[in-house]
Amino acid sequence: MTLEKIRNFCIIAHIDHGKSTLADRLLEMTGTVEKRNMKAQLLDKMDLEREKGITIKLAPVRMEYKDHELNLIDTPGHVDFSYEVSRSLEACEGALLVVDATQGIQAQTLANVYLAMAANLKIIPVLNKIDLPAADVERASAEVINLLGCDKDEILHISAKTGQGVDQVLEQIVSNIPPPKQSQSAETRALIFDSYYDDYRGVILYVRIFDGEIAKNAQIKMFATDVSGTALEVGALKPGMQPNRALNTGEIGYIVTNLKTTREAKVGDTVTLANQKITEPLPGYKDVKPFVYAGFFPDSNENYQLLKDAIEKLSLSDSALQFAPENSPVLGFGVRIGFLGLLHMDIVRERLEREYNLELVVTNPSTDYQVSLLSGEELDIKSASELPDPAKIREIREPWIKGEIVVPDSYVGSVIQLIASKRGVHKNLSYVDSRALVSFEAPLANLLTDFYDQLKSITSGYGSFNYELDNYRAEDLVRLDFYVAGDIVGALSIMVHRSEAQSLGRETVQKLKDVIPRQNFQVALQAAIGGKFIAREDISAYRKDVTTGLYGGDVSRKKKVLAKQAKGKKRLKKFGKVEIPAEAFTVMLKRD
Image (cartoon, rainbow, N blue to C red; front, top):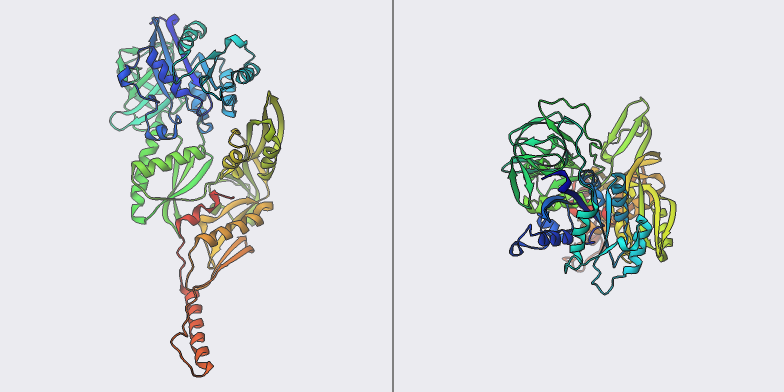
């Protein structure tokens, strides 16, 4: 296929605006998939994607239309996977911007548009779901015109579900998206925009060839990781794998390699031939760093090895997953895992429970902190229990994010209040028609637990939220510890700002009181900063009436028996162990 006839494009949109449905219609109309093999969300391979109705792993597919070769990449819409989206955009020359006509522009739409503009892509605006009674085409069109500065007649009106207007989309792709540029370089260079691990074939790379060609059985090399391997098979996805002799300049396809883990071939890396020395890799590669950490513990210690094996298998196909063993006196042996965000954490937890039949206890998610010691040493801690002696610490820095919230203008006041309650700083407010865009900065740790739920509830479900990591800032942070019956429970310790420690300590011990069952002796629940207790609740003991067997006689007989019982309770208090149920470790997840 000549370069003039190739079109590489992707679909960008907010979650649930109809990306995968539009991809299904394009596959159907170009005859790539036969009608009898068609099913909804065809490119979403995981059961989880189908159930949640979201795209987690991007998927490329090649279509033929009017003797042109169309390469589509269906990207994830969620903020946790924005690095994958940015790599996919780098592999394309154009993008279909899909906006739901009933909801208009949302936060993630804005974020993806900015990424597409930064990559210099030709953007084709598409209004979807125009067949729904709630569709407000005029308002949504005005928002798109404001955002892109395009003309009203450039916006395509479609219904991806019924197929109305989708033929127009295909015509626009062929006529408006530019073909790939002719390579000026003699070196072979290809961009990895995704990679995954196949149990039977090893690591499979999804690549876009920028210069040269990669043929079957060629010796290849990854630039950033400096790992060599063999291209056992190359070809295109239609949507099943279709082997070919070689992948040439401008094409998007797959390479089956003999590599053992995706850590050797990371998203954004440059692939070249092993016998070539390239000096300049393709731009934009960065190591993806997780910034949400949680402890995963098996329900019983004998399942620890199963959990470890399961995480190792998952990490073969997910290079962003980082983990280290962790030990807790209460929960036993477990693993501390780093994630890109809360959705990523949810998906990994569900996959571990479903695919490997594990019962898990997950501790409260936290972020990482940078600690400077008086000795000049710098530490990076992933959980509060790793914090060194406060007397040795010069400062603690926590990650802050830059966020954007898009809401109908009537909810602006309550959104700004919510940001302030999370120690956030409201930066900017702009209006697009009847919608407001609120820009703010806030500490990541305060948004981890239930910020998104609270945003949805105060905006009646209309608010949408997008964020990116900004920097680390020194704050007055302390470690808040929790004691159960006089014993510190390390897995419950959290890092918190000093101004919030008192209220959070009180709130948490009250929740623990509801969760921890009563014992035969009184149990004290305490919150402390260092050696100073700041909150306390008591779980009262079961009271057994030991005097029921006595009848009549002197009152001193009763007193004698009660004194004996009190002595026994005192002894129990010394030696009795409190069973802490699994729910106690997730009380922080819902702070309402």
